[in-house]
Length: 283
Image 1 (tube, rainbow, N blue to C red):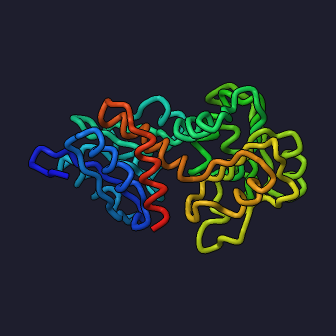
Image 2: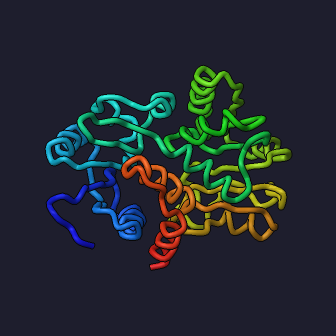
């Protein structure tokens, strides 16, 4: 990689970011297409976000990925949002070019990951676990295509707020409830797609799962946003039943690919990015 005074800098900001695979994924893509870009990671504490955005402007950093805990709070420091980010109320991608404009590619990334698996949500019942930041974007995106969307969360008030927000914006009815064993069993009986947008099963709690194996079926698609470990207990058990599974690396790559295309105006080399992510995650 040749870096010069003309090299465009992109970065991910969040806390923590030491584990992030995004630098690997994007730098491989930039090199593959011969683009004069470089991608780095910056730890930005919650109370340092305002200063960080000022630094981005002053240093001329061209593009950002924004991860926890800044996806919502960064909005107040941006000049404007695209329609999706405005509807969702969260930003994961920023372009700093005269104005600072916020986008959200999480929902598109999740949809593209599902479609790549032959599992687009159109006309299907989808159950999403979690109502936090990871759930927000995918819930908005899926609500506009699924025949039925159910959001379950340990704190049901948060699921209700998200469902109400989605219904108000999209006009689509979204059901919600407490993430409990009984309700989960009931809703999964006829669900086509299960999405885990919680952190259950993430390292170091690899032995945990948000759904007991007895509730899974071979005709389901099971999508887990967790990518460390690459194969969670939920995915391992779903796969053993013959179900189609999608891991968190696919989500990471597809939302990253959408960010890449916003920054560069070029089609992202998704296969190259996916290989880099899987190779790096094994190290």
